[in-house]
Length: 312
Image (cartoon, rainbow, N blue to C red; front, side):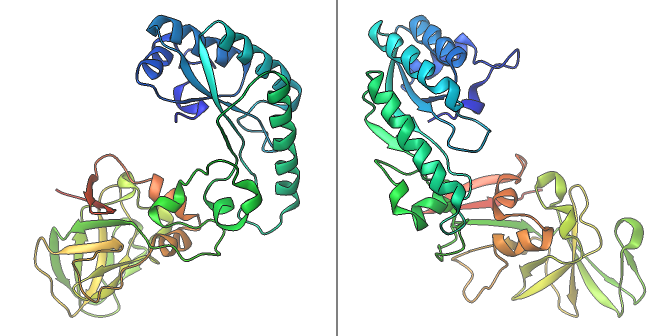
C-alpha cells in the first residue's frame, strides 16, 4: 500500500494523474486522507480504465497525515460517490496511534475512540471496507484492542520493537570491507579536527563507509564494529565515506569484513553491535539508523534476512 505522502505531486499537495493511474493499473492500494487527494486518485483511475483501491485515512490524534475530524464525514461521502460512479473502491479504513510504544497512553485510548467514531461515520456513508487497520509494530505487540482486521508491521520486520517489550530477532545486517590498515605511534591524531589521539602504538583499519552512507556522525568516538573476532571502537570523526576503527595490536587483511551491526549467521560466535546500540551511540532511534542507510550500500537478501554490504 502506498501511504498518502509517498505519491504526492511535486507541483502541489495532491498526486499526479499519471502516478495515480500507474497505481490503479498495478492494483496498488493507495492511502487517501483528503477530498482533493481522493479526486486526483479517481481521475487517475479513469485514465487507467481501472478502479482505484483506496484506504481512507482518518487522523486519530497525530495532527499529521489523515483526515481531520471536521473533514472526515465529507471525505467518506465523496468516496462513496466515487464508488457509485466506478472510479474507486474503498477497501480499507486506517488510522495511526501516536503513543503506541507507551503502555496505556491516554493519547492511544482517545486515538482508539476516534477510530471507532471514524468507522461508524464511514459505515453511515455507505462504505463497507473489507479491512480496518490501526496498529503498527508497537501496537501489534502491546495492544490487542487496536488490531482489527490487519496490522501494519514496519520496523518489526527488521527486528525493531518500538515498545521495548518484546525481544525480536534482528533481520538486517550492515557490513563493510577493510580497505587500508596502518600502524601508528602514540599521539597520532585521527580524522578531522583530531578529536581522537592514540594513547599507544596501535593498528588502525579504514572502512569505506561514512555519514553519506547512513552512519550517524554523532556516533563518532562511541560506536563499535565487529572485526577480527572482537568489537573495535570507532576513533576520530566518522567522515563522509570513511570510518577508522582501532585494532590495538591485532592485525587484519585487506578485504576482511567488518560487521557494523548484525546479525551475520556465517560468522560463528560473532557478537556485533545491534541497531539499537548504534541508535544509542547516536542519540536517536533504531528506525533512523535503518532508514538512513544510503543508496550506495548494496542490498542482498539472504534467506529471511537482508544484508547491507558496502563494496568499494
